[in-house]
Length: 365
Image (cartoon, rainbow, N blue to C red; front, side, top):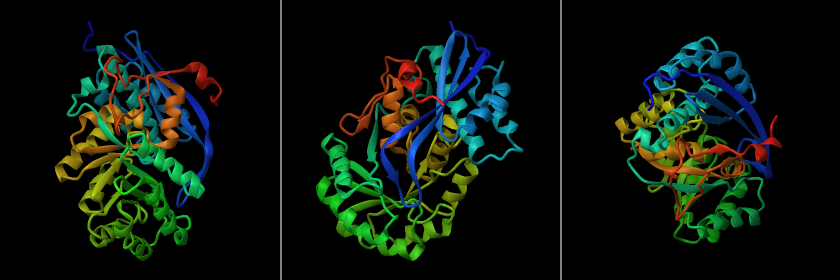
């Protein structure tokens, strides 16, 4: 029987860098690998895991600062542990690496708590839906036209009726790339585009005027998220049927509050691996619910699946090519989309994941 107090006994970190399967880029960044920082927390005979996608510096911060904060604390008191970590990094700066490090620890604590109760995390949190819709996300600007069309069409053929591509690196080429993508996926599938803040305001607005003819319904970060006035301008002026989304670079609740107060988006995005974990993600969901703005999770589908089933305003999850590939590669128990949805495996406790140590060993830093 689980008691009300189960002290944290050990906190361990490890870092894995996985090369991309092909060169990748978006409107403002290029990369050839992705790093995952894993945390494993033990208490009461169980071990929970959590992770973030970030710099290896996250692991050092966890080892040097956060592990000592939660060691000996009650693993059942996830909010208390989270608040203690937030307090501990006050002088280090909340946005960025600190919030990502907290995220990995917080996710591991939630996974641990559910394992102590021997239930799936969705059951512990309380689901409002059995599964969550996903959209296929990739379409990198480094892709050839053939690679772009093949990837997006493949998702649609696999039953995912909404897909997203990157734009913004070569603005003059974007209309043709979008037309090719639309032809590849057919007239029924939803087509999303993500500029990653690459456009200037008027440039972004001019691009949006082409979207109705191309069937584009989602315009992500048309301008930088550091330009809330620009996002509001775009939201007010883009053609009807085109939604503005942003929020993936939110690390704390005041950021999301400011975005909502400025009426910058039609759909808010949040990333549990950046906004201080599942605790932070659920706080953002409550804020979105109060503002009656839908929420979409950013990348890391295996992390967002269980809280996505439990947060009322969640519309869908981003089935991001890089992270979906890594999670299938490193973790046993990972689930894939069926008919455009992810559904938790309720036969497995916690997040349902366990590290495949043999597969992961070759990528360990």
